[in-house]
Length: 391
Image (cartoon, rainbow, N blue to C red; front, side, top):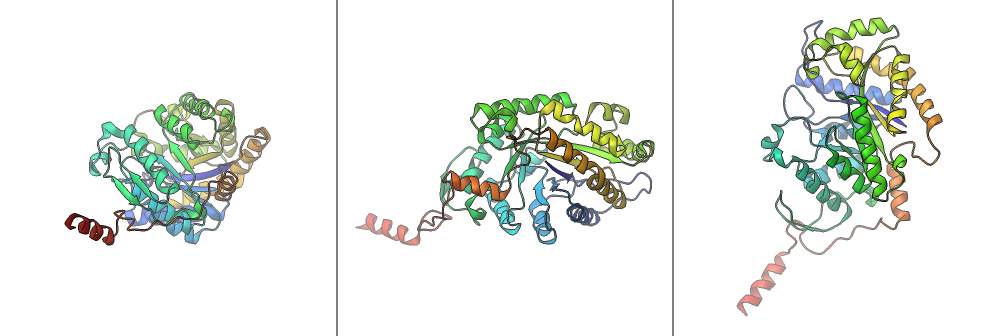
């Protein structure tokens, strides 16, 4: 089972020191956090995608491309790539490039985001959010799996003889997660393609998470990708940990109370009762997250949010140390004990995807069609056509 961290990249004032990092400091802190997660042996670092203050990660592939060069083992991912407002042609190019640069040490999580105004900012209609997600992903898959694409749809200009470059590493696209908190249509989409489904339930009760995950599992089996318990599932959550649980509570409380991300709504007592937020000792985190298997079955990826709400960098690095040193080893051991032998322990690696594709005869050498892949034509075609008209 994979364990890692994700960042939403919020810029939040520290309620104790009143220090507010500027955008540059926040971005550089995220890089430090990711590198430290790699050094201590966590499996995944994922960054969100936002295009508005108070968030900074507007260009995930830029950040992850840099991290590919300065980390050694960690899988680099996204904690939402906006499939609705990004052009799927650009996504195909950027993430294939990241796949090549990282030598396959990456995947991506697609979602619609949680910021309504992002739609008009990028010329899209929020009322078409689900339809955009469905159409754009269908095109993205074709751009990765077909060397030359002719395509027309509702939400972008047609493509004629288009080849996305670079081609996916070893002829196999990156592994894709579909993330949704409340839309069964997205769980259906993940199941239809046999992709992963991640429920980032940092604001939702586990009963809701279990309902969404179990729906995805049923539909995964319906589409013939395997048994329901073999579907690829990920969860999100958040923790704040100290060896003394009361000290953890007292230290995190002012951050919770003032953090805009928590909306100044429910109390921390209510939040820790009703959502995965766990504030306490390492053993409390182990007990809480270890119980999730009983509600959603064995799952393959658990991501923790640890760098939000204005927490100082030093504290965040300490949280990562506690996760990697005490919490993750115990959870990993327990997960392996509970996992049925024929249920995947992890999401598929690039090497596993390549092996599976070769076994199915789905890997082929790039076929370079004659002509201009930007328009599907050559200058000679236009000259020949003109000659025919004038002949």
